[in-house]
Image 1 (spheres, helix red, strand yellow):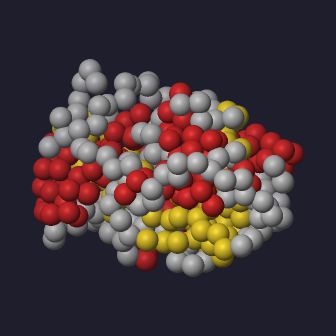
Image 2 (image 1 turned 180 degrees about the vertical axis):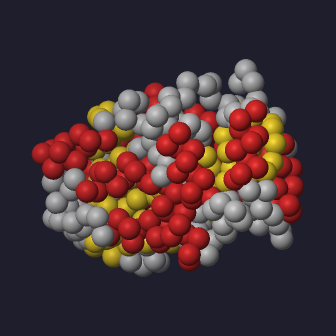
Length: 359
């Protein structure tokens, strides 16, 4: 990376501003160019120097974060990472922030345990890096080189060991496993709206924090012909149903006879994420084999790339989103490089292709 990502922190809490500054400054690729206690102060700072990324609280004095976000995206788009407390009201508002153009949403870092601090650092810094590469509605961000990650990554092995070989699975229903990160909420929304009610069960991992996935599922449930819900441990996955992995938990596909269900479990971050796409895809390879379809959408990093390859090796149909329609062409690109994707399609062509070739 030629230069550091310059970040402006906007939050009315001095403690939070200090904590976020310390976390971001600990990353060698990020520089905190300034902080602001409210959006009006932030505007003055932006007029002097435009940041690469803004971290934005939602509930603030003088002007709320959502109003500020709408003004930014309509006048001079800048990548924004929304950082919100995980209250019910805040969650609903944060979902609107995605519609208004926020690149990422994460929860405010917990400061009460060493593990939480370390995970918060990983998630926050990755969110800022992903946002810096995102394509905005009105402003195209030039592609920057992928950073060399410093923090250790766990593979899906810590949750589910890889099968040495895959047995052909017969007499089961088809299922679809999907994974996404930055830009994925809009991509998933667009994809599901184009599907009929009689679709194979769909299991989705979208990188989002705890609490936000429930609101995301509820909003999708009102927009498409399918039943969409946040997954709970033991939920059945069947025709016409979509299960969204809950934030902060891994989700695995399970099978008993001809019936599919999901297991929701705790565990370490995998590929720096929880839930992890690789975990879902590996379980789909094991328990659905050639009866599965794997779809990897927009997002930074490589979560899901190896899992998609495992699905392909198990006989599954595999699809990666193309570069043009991806907000961040990271995860799909890594899958394509591995030879994991049988098809590379734009998001608006996926539903018609699946209806024609998979149902």
